[in-house]
Length: 310
Image (cartoon, rainbow, N blue to C red):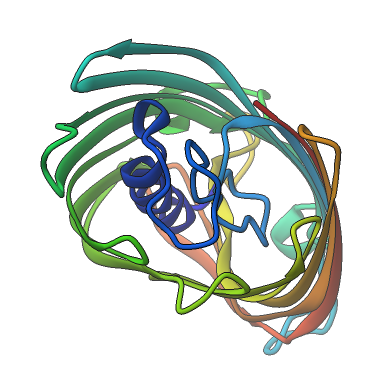
């Protein structure tokens, strides 16, 4: 998952915990006692109730805007697998394993053809909230590797960390501010962000956790229609010692319409489609020198996700 996506997913998960902490009864009019607000998950990033998720994205070719023609083809499968949760009164500890397989075809750009790219991360979350207080805290650390496994070195290692302070303004409005740090391909990034989740009524919800913004509409309890914008891409170590290109840095944005259907208390199936835009691809050598810097033309994409929620 792209670091910015991970940041937004963490903020949204924390905002969700403000409602669902240890079975806290819902205070929203019209909801049953003991029910918790379920966030929408329009991009299958892990929002809402915890559960096992598999998401498949087929990306149309992203043509190279400058250069000798050609483009980048992508096929992506992401999985989210919670592996444990411990409730210690005011503290909550939880963990997940996230795996992404990206099949990328670079069309021969700088000698790169088709490649299988892998990202594996383990995320450990610690959150604190008192039942008699609207304030809460959340932190996490997420080490992992992103590589094609041809020649794994320290460049494949990445890590993310987050510190977050949240406030439940009202039963329908939650706010959060946070600081996020990312280390990947020997580069460190520190970002600040804010999060807002607002339910003006029982059908509509706004989840603004930049850089992810989603608006959802639930005509019934089993159907959700939403519009979402979110970042994609990733950073990977690739190739062997003898190859010139050793680092891939891909960034892009996706805007989509998503439709989700619930089947019983646990299953969620969703489909989304839209446009990938604002793409940029950098290829670097082992000394982090930029060999190729290409802008990518917009292209359509489609995705299907299946989730088993706890």
